[in-house]
Length: 399
Image 1 (cartoon, one colour):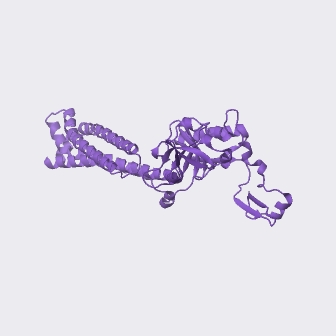
Image 2 (image 1 turned 120 degrees about the vertical axis):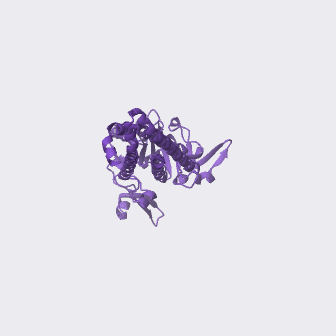
Image 3 (image 1 turned 60 degrees about the vertical axis):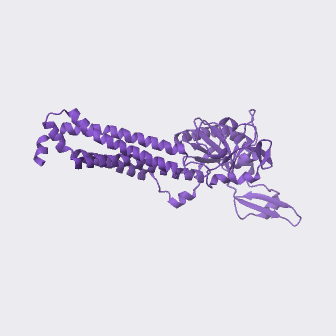
């Protein structure tokens, strides 16, 4: 009896420790990986949609600089590395080809509300999302609802109401701290010859891409900075899909131009992992293994109790009492396993093994502690089924 009790106790403890701890560690590691990718992109998640205005104008990617003997200087972009400078001088045209169709012409004025087309475009969605004009080191952001926001090491990030405020505000990366200066109790920085009030410093406790990024409220952008025409909208995948569709419909109705999706920027973590780490099939296999382990160990535990169940049935003990007798030991050691798993998870959390927000990791801990407890409660179902369907004659014959 002691041997069987020891087997049941150890098996129950190990089973529910594993059911609690392994998914917690796995899911936290997955979130850490996703979070690192998000930070590497400048706090842009994999759900984000990058887009531009599809004006049909040629992509102007080559910069040309011409200085004549007379001292005249010309600077312009074109869609070709080779350019006929004689034609340029003859025509007197120093603008990029097809400049009259360039998208600058459709967004370089503000309407009666004081907003440009781009500002209206980024505010057209509903739900929780984070939208921005993406301009290299600078992001001109608009926040709708309560989406996930870049972390800050001091100060705060923008409130949604501040995104369209006429006050020029900025959240800086730590690399720009040396460029700031104090005016009274406030901190300021100059960018593009304009002064911005610093309300926070973005980043984490270790060096990241966020250290080299400037986040401005959308309304503070100069009109010529809104014509970069590279945007993104980020948040929950379902919300983002609806928001992008609404923005596309608005652009089509207002200016007759559709939004064209762009490829997601590749991060260093994408390159290192080859894009295969924590794919959906790996997650399915992991949880399938845990489920099979749960079923097989529980089945083996019940099989070890067959003789005892048969003996108790022969003596006339009720099914309910037998069920509770067996379940009681599984429940006791199972609770011990869950508590031990929670303690081990808390130790990992206290040592900051994960760089995630404490609340995110704590949320995973609570979720899997709850799931483990529910699975422990559900053990009563196969136990009662086993007691009711056990053939006493077969147990006696095997004995």
